[in-house]
Each structure stands twice: as structure tokens, then as C-alpha cells.
Image 1 (cartoon, chains in turn red, yellow):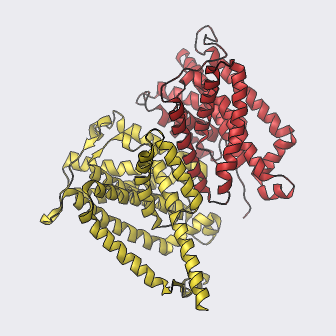
Image 2: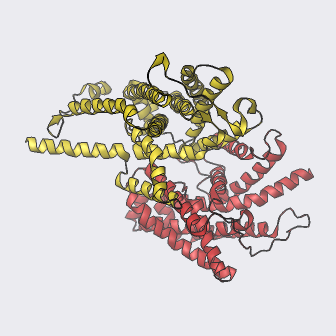
Image 3: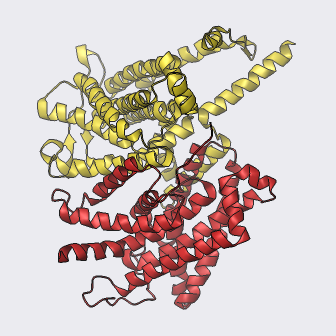
Length: 292
Length: 341
């Protein structure tokens, strides 16, 4: 039982990372209706910007705020420059554009900041949160910030005009346009917000996994998995899904004997697929109903 | 009844730059054969090897295209079927000393069964969820190949080395040239089959399912059966490509079949043209050569150059190479008509 509790807590700590990323994934899904494969690299690039700012002597929280602003602007710029010209292209072409973005950001970061592993400071300290040392203070802080972001997003989407406009633009672009919403800019805003949330996720994750251009690859995968399990239409579900993926991954690694450490990713993914077969729109997602 | 009238309607007599379109088709076809036949005697060995690989990728992309382009099922996991095909071939040749000729049918059958079985649970998933499921497959396969359970067969991380086949009947070809000829022959069979499949009654059923599953099932198409069958056939194509790839490289290892391969196949599909059979050839060439070209520009920024090229290609041809060709032909036809008046 004690082993079980230990593993669950450890899973919760890693799950916090995935939850952060899943939130960013859902955010952009709300705005553009696709999964953005470049999301992880965008977060990684933002984290490098923060690292550079801190290297230049800015205090942590100032660099933190500046990075969020820069990332927001960059996200809007990417939408305007890269994706707006593809407005009428088929969906699969968009996915290829995401792959291209991923390649550009990854290799660009490697070129500017090289591929050596860098440590990233944490504002919460590295000591244990509880006496047993299962969860570090940083893990606790990370989970707290994720929940805070979730609350902020909930308020934004439910209780502000612009949040409502964004939801309308994503759900039904034609009608939203007729109601006077500038759909194109709402999409750009969605990209900006996703980039900003991604940058927060990146800055929270970097102290744990260390900073390097390929740091986000596997985390993004887990983030996708978390978002899909929770339901892509529900930010709260995505966060919960992220935690679930972390816990399942840890438990599978511990209790399924053949699995071992190297197979636990595939086991986690298979469990997720099994969940999806039973509940195809995720645990908390709304099933999509179309009129024939 | 309606369907039959559509079928029997005569196509409008179109002309391209003054010639009838069928005549153009014959010219392009003959030219293609001539080029394919001269390539092995003109090009250097390494370049020939690359062309062979590009053709192999084209077959794999064709498999993906049958699934995604014609049946509307998204897959990020075709590297898995490629890997299964490659390992089937390698294990047969290395473990059982079976001639390489038999590896392709065996890989085809194994991959068809595997793809069909994977297609069954995938039936419940759509779009992004299906992408995630196939993606899980792509991630899992290299790990499974490495795991200690099957290490005896797969050689674990080290993989399996096999011997490149020589030309049969004492043909005056070296092994690279023979492999090229062999690949071209296999590719021709595969392309003709794909063409006929898509043009057949079954092909129309696949396209109907892609365009409107509910309408398709209302017309009496067994949507589940056709979807899983397409998964199987798609896996078959990619698996045969994998087996050919194993022969060409004469080595298989788990790390050659990662998620990156699945992404490369997907990029080839979109760049060549979704739901276009001949476009996959362009896709194969793109997948093989563009990363090399990008590296040629700048070593450090190879990925960025690749990304920029990819973006430019998507801007210039949002519907892929096939879409561009179609557009040009339509324009030329239009001009031919205008000048004919």
C-alpha cells in the first residue's frame, strides 16, 4: 500500500508537467480546432528566451513576465505570418505547416543556444514539500500554478466578452462573423494565448527536465495524451487527464512486470487508447453531434 | 440507377496545348518507362540506391494515401507497419534462410492481418483520436522490438543484418542495379493495383465513406468492414515497402522506425497530394532528397532550412504536387478551348 501511495504521489508530480502542457494544447485546440504539433517547440523556444533574459541579469519574476508577453506577441505573429496565408488550404496542409514550424524552431534554438543541457532556476526552491520527500517544493508550485492558470482560463472564457467571442469564433466561424466578431483576429489571439500558456509550462518544466532544444518532444506527447483523455473541449478535463497520464505511467512501470522502465510510455498510451475506445470523446469532452 | 448514369457519361473531349488529353497521357507514360529503364545504366551506384529508396518510400506513402487520402482515416503510425514489413523480411532471411523473393508476400500478409486487426478497435475513433491511437502504435513498435521478450528474433537494439540479393538468371547487373529493377517491378504492380482499386466499385465505396460516412452507410456500404479492410490494405502496401527497404539497406534496427519515419511519410503524402496516386512518387522523392538538400545549405540550421522549404512548398502548392499539376492542366485545357473557338 505504501509503495502504491508513493507511486501515485510521484505520478502526480510528473503529471503536473503533463497537465501544464495539456492545458496549452487544449487552449489552442479551442482556437483553431487542430492539435498543434509545434506547441512543444514553441514552449521550448520561449523558455530559452527566459533563460537568456535571466542570463542578462533580469530578476526571475521580471523575466517570467517579459517572456509571457514576448511569447504572446510571437504566437500572434506566427499565426499572422505563417498560418493566415494557408487559410484556405486543406486541413492536412496545416498539419504539415505545424511540422515545418517544429523543425524551424527546434533547429533554430539549437543554432542560437546550442544543444548543451542548461539548468533553469526555480522560484519555489528545491526542498521537499512533505517530510518524506516524495514531492519537491517545485512540483507543488508547478501544480499550484497550473491550477491557477486553469482558474484564470475558466474565468476568461466564461465571464468576459472577448472569451465568449473566441468560443463563438471557434465553434461556428460563419455565424460568429455575421455577429460582428473578427474571426481572424480571434484565431490569432488564441495562438498568442496558447504560446503564452506554453511559455509558462516551459518555464515550470525546465527546472525538472533541464533546458535543451529536444526537451519538449516526449512531454508534448504526454500532454497530447492527457488532453485527449480528458477531452479536448474541456480545459479542466485536460489538466485532470495530464495528472492521470502521469499516475498511470508510473503505476504501469511499477506493477506490470514485463514493462520495466523503457516500455512504460507505450503501456500508458495503450491504456489511453483503451479508454478512448470506451469513451471516444474523452472523459470530460462533449460528444460532437452533427445534423445530417 | 443514378450511379450508372454517372459512370457511362462520356468525358468532355479535352485538349492540352492542341493535343487530346489521352495522347498526352500515353506520351507521359512512355517517357516515364524510358527514364526508369535508362536510370540504372546512367547514374552512379549511390544515386541509384537513393532513387530505389525514394521509390520504396513512394510505395509506403501510397499505402498511407489509400487510408488517409481515399478513406479519410488519419494515421501517424505507418512507421509501425513499415517496421513490421522490414522485420518480417529480415527475420525470414536471417533466421530461416528463406529466399528474398518470398519475403514480400509474407510481409504483405503479415501486415495486412496486423493492419486489419488494428483497424477494428480504431473504428471507434475518429480524427484526432485515431491520430493518437496510431501515434501510440508508432511509439510502441520500436520499444517492443527492443524488449527482451522478442530479442531472440529481432536482435534487440543491434537489429539484424541481411545480405543484399544478387541478380538472378546471371543477368549482368550488380546488386544495386538488380534491387532497383526489382523495386521498379514491384512498384509497378503496386501502383496498377492501387489505381484499379480506387477506380473500382470498392474504391468508390472508400471515397463515399470519406466524404460522408452516414450517407455511405445509408447507401448500403458496410462502413466498418470497408474501413478495417482499408486499414489492412494500407498496412500491406507500407509493409511491402518496409520489406523492400530492409533489402535495400540490408539492415534493420528498431531506431530506424521511429515516429520521425511516420512524420516523414505523412509529409510525403501531403506534399505529393492527398488522394492522388501519381503524387506519391513526388512525395517519395521529396522525403528522401529534401532533408539532404537542406543539410547541404547549412549543417547547423538543416532543420530550419527543411522547415522553410516545407512551408514554401505548402504555400506554392497547398494541394500538393498533384494539385498543382491538375491546376496547370485545367488552365491549359481552358486555353485550348478558348483558342479553338
